[in-house]
Length: 436
Image (tube, rainbow, N blue to C red; front, side, top):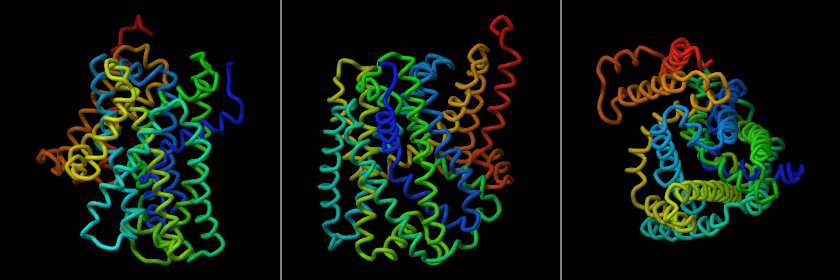
């Protein structure tokens, strides 16, 4: 068998979508809509590039190159080992996996819990159940399509569709005026908001699980698996476009009627309560649980599969139990501390991930020996310096801090692009001509 049926291709695409679509994907688009108002479309174009385009390109890049470690080794073998490990730890047990439980608990349980004194015990019980289910499902990563593609994803989409239809037939208001930076630079701010989903980093992890699900449906030739992974990426991207557009619209009409709100959670709460009353709060809790559970299963599967490959002495299932257990503990006790470490790490590796993905589509870059090392080195160094220069983590770098403060806030996060382009130019000019 060399290709999937149309039905199976759609199921694989739904599976990939559901692995990506977690709490962050639910929170940021409605907040963007509420803040951007009449500029929502422009802001969503920028958001779509980093929240849809780069993640899908990441899945395709990993599939085309034969794995994240193979792609990263184009820079250097040691870089491949360190970068791949950082990716899996950051998007796995150190940040993203614990956040799935803590966020869904806040949305699904906290609003209904009678008192704050026993809330900690409720969170412990919830996290045990949540990670037990996620761990059990992740024991068969090649069969995720059966659950995520056939059941949980359609349910999630149906619930989001219900809120969207409600906002169309019973709109609370029209789009409000853009606020803050969304009034001056909606495209750039939307572009930066897409970072917050962290999906570009997750994309580098998910390719291995998607390949397993394609294999499980009878496609085993490597070239065919790559083609089907790419097709699944386009299916997932199309679903993302529709869902993001729908919930951004929900946020935009909310911002015009409910006043200032601090985050996407408040936006969603306001509009669902307006549309459906208390039932809306229950509906929102179910949406968050489904989205977070899908992502948690995908992340546990991806991380466990990777570590079972590099440390084969420990079985895949043991790794899955280990990551579920560690994530359960972190979600209850140490998330703030882990976030303090993980956030600057993500700020450093996110630009590197974007540049690595983009370079993978330029075949000439691999033929020129110095393009990958120089471009990634300059991107990484700039990201490190700019992260530390803010003074929020390890202290300020005086001269750099002063210079960065002269730039508009929206451009500071993109300053790495200039050294990256310079690295490409240097690598192209100075690589040995014999390797062209």
